[in-house]
Image 1 (spheres, rainbow over the protein chains, first blue to last red):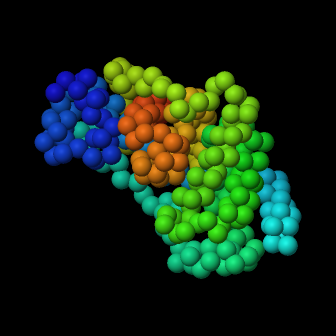
Image 2: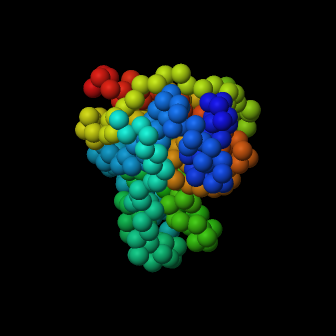
Length: 79
Length: 212
């Protein structure tokens, strides 16, 4: 497998959807190609960082406005 | 370092995935009109929904409006929630629609999810800077959140919405396709492109000896 072949399969490789034979071919290529190895590893890391990131608390004024709006509308809907 | 180790992308469970035992009870109570039960659900998800609307709209006012509308619509349409998916997944679908409506209103010529987009699948990145094992640890939480929000905002909306749903909200490929009315292959190719673009954009923060 060459670099271009790896990128054609990369989406399914990252999501672990490849059959074992194709996966092994990719890993064989990655063991020899430093460029692809770094790109693949840093792409995995990118997903991991986004996936694990915790959302920051709502700014207090945003939170207040949300709860005032909810209170007003929900009571109207309920009525 | 660590470059030969090929750990699979295994997401850690986020709060949205760890369905708390009381959630079906809260949803049932809210369906029966219990406002405080619904407010508990809002409190549980408001941060994540605001991050979603902020990432998609890239505008604070629109993000706030879209979040409010999403929660209000969710309450008004709760009777339609059948419990076939997680409550959060259902809420995300409502919020993404509200956020896209805001984005289209502000930038009507720029946002079309239906169009074919050049996913540049033949492009093999040529930058090979390594990041080291925990590049995100160089930044404190709020700073990192700012970086992630900024780089996702640099993506074309067609890519960032797919990435948001699939990799941040952790919807499945099929759920993402259904929510955005896209084909599964379109979701897959946009997701890969988004991941590669974000990797490239994060280089400037995470590469060894980078701007930390």
